Image (cartoon, rainbow over all chains, first blue to last red; front, side, top):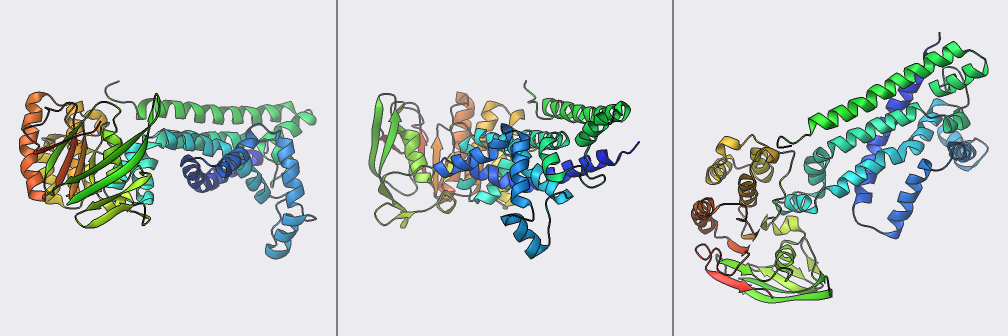
Amino acid sequence: MDLTPIWLTLKLAAITTLVLLVIGLPVSWWLSRGRSVFKIIIEALITIPLVLPPSVLGFYLLLAFSPQHGPGRWLQQVFNIQFVFSFQGLVLASVIYSLPFMVGPVKSALQQLPPSLLHASYSIGKTRWQTFVRVQLPNIKPSLLTAMVLTFAHTLGEFGVVLMIGGNIPGVTRVASIAVYDSVEQMDYHSANVYSLILFCITFVLVTGVFVFNKYRFKSPVE
Amino acid sequence: MISIEIEKKLKAYKGQEALHIKKQFIPGSITRIYGPSGAGKTTFLKSIAGFVHPEKGRITVNGQTWLDTVANINLPPQKRMAGFVFQDYALFPNMTALQHLQYATEDTGWIKRLLAIGKLDDFSDHKPAWLSGGQQQRLAILRALAIKPQLLLMDEPFSALDTESKMQLIGELKPVFEELEATVLIVTHSPGELAELTNQEFCIR
């Protein structure tokens, strides 16, 4: 039984979550501050992967990053990077596809913090950055954890977008969800069952873990 | 001298109303500010602190211009450093009482003294969720005092305290205000409240 697709999936989910943590935090912070037409458009673009068929997103990414077209050709010629049918391509697609799962909960949590918390920090001379690190970030821990787990779990389950941009190359782009599909195609139900069960168990443990953590870790003593 | 002249639109149920205030405060004075609900008392304090921005106006504090809409000067709250006690306390849920004060100042002697004034010595390692309403309110006052502000703005700062605790705290705070030579503006519920602490009064209608 080849477990490479499982390890590849976990690696992809971990890298995607880390990249989205770095990108998602500043984007969420920026979106949480005030409203403008520009911000609404950016937020709509970030949210689109939630409703757009993954194959559509994958198709556009395939076009954009294929070595025959604009950005893909430029990346190949200048940096010798190829996103199509490569693991980097999967990471890029996953980051775009899972962006709303990181940005949504974090932005909402930041917006729900009372403005007086920020004012209190500013009034004692703290900068926006200090306030973000010392006040905002620690007080949105549950939402941040939820966003990270959702991002991780969502990446585990990606299929359409991953298939479009990565194809089905064993050891490179053949993640667990594609391995399940591939096994069923070959009537290998045993392998499909093992891959599916492992994915189910991982996601169940993750999501249950978050619920338990958020229930007990942040419960007020007076509740 | 603290000189304030501001115009700020207020959102009201009946439509928009305007807050127009022109007032001077003597340095070192303690003024109680009262007026009906919705008159703009909190907005007045927030305008001085720099949390909200008046459409027109000028604020000078001891010779320094904090706001001048004509000259396009508008110092951020971080540069005004007005101590502010919020009506909802605005305590940081992730920090203990001690950490609140350490976040505001590095002066350990001052922190120790403040904790004693607020009777929070035994609760210094408690987060706000583990403090009573009165203790939370005292912590909010101590945090504002931690930066030794020249101007202290207090929005109903004693509302959660019983009469005895309030009088005790006032007795402790008065010499601190004098020592810091701070000008203090306190929003209160009613005109007669806090007469023992304040030496000026100002009504906003």
